[in-house]
Length: 312
Image 1: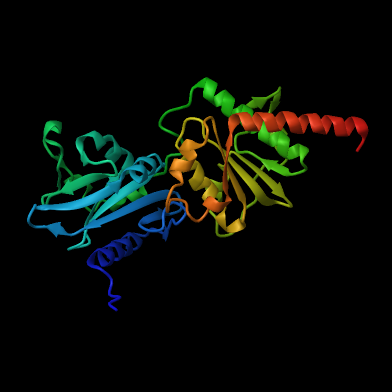
Image 2: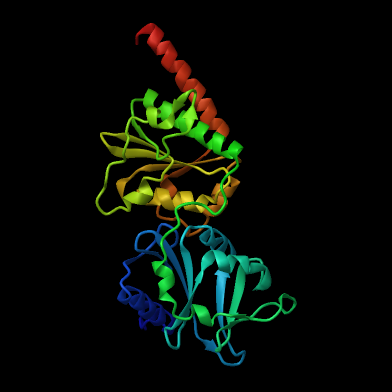
């Protein structure tokens, strides 16, 4: 049996070595996918695709699976590296910019077909115009050193923001009633005339060695017991579910139970976690509809009131 690595695998490994040689800390991000997606310096994501030169067509051909491409491009600080297997050289492109070009690319029902020639021209559909010159992105490792963005490109509407804060307040109150320590990152929004910061029993999330604690502190609501996170909640009303799952995945080593709250029937949640994506945490990840959180809040608060009246 021949266990010799393929040329594509060797090119990918050589490219990743060069990323490290540029001073970056890199680890596979197996929360998102089993291979070829990496966390760089803790707060950036790197998707690596490899291809050898197809002489008969005069191109390097790279396939980008539709649902991976779409969701990966929605992550903050996401970069796609197209690595040429005959040299391990690469073009490094902002994933969000690449997503904006999608209508110009050849595609079928499953994947986008990225074709780059030897002069680093990104081939487009005939009706889309001239090829795009990618030479400015050739070997641009500096893209991995850009300061991370901490805010989404579009702010949610006031109505969505208010609903998000309301659900956070409900989850904090449910956790408090059930005797958990509770945490949320945004302190100023109000729920029933109290700020979320007042409702949360923990003002700061405890540090855990080996985790990216800055990302963990962004999780919408966490219930803890003796400072250990037992349940973590992400409320995803308009933003991509992937970003929430990535944040939850930071707690995967702690055996925390994960909950994703949406305003639909869960079809988007199931679609996003299909196949290998998030395979490491999916057995611990549950969907809840916003109406179910409201129902649970009403039941828990009524039960708490009855217990207080009966002193039991």
